[in-house]
Image 1 (cartoon, rainbow, N blue to C red):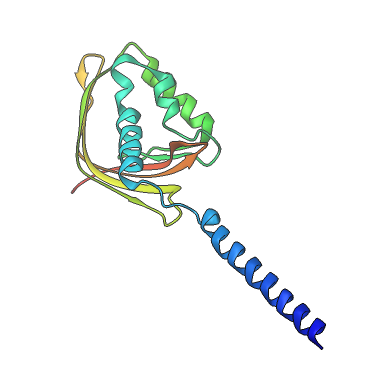
Image 2 (image 1 turned 180 degrees about the vertical axis):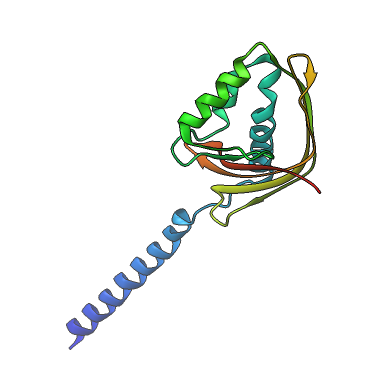
Length: 167
């Protein structure tokens, strides 16, 4: 009987040790909360770069801000909707024209929110975007700008954006 009691005690001791090890290890599997302040700064920089490329026509900077695939969507304050890479290429030709000149932009009331998983963000802001076309003003003033970004391979990319005029 003593041998059986020792075996029972040894089994209980072994299971208790295993339980403690598993409990201690579980902390390593917890998904860490993203540093929201750092992520917010990265999202804001992506948003600003999405317009900031224009004065120097730095198309590589522009492309670094967007997820250029078939789901990419831009809704402009006019009746134009651009969907996917082909529509983007058409828009890119317009901005490459020497007739287009970006003057500057101003973003105010920027609000950024994140999904619980921390890999999706959406934003809202007021926008003034000053440009010239063939020497004449071609501005978006008092516009509202909203968008959705996704963190892909560590970089924030705009998947969808919508511009409209406040009326």
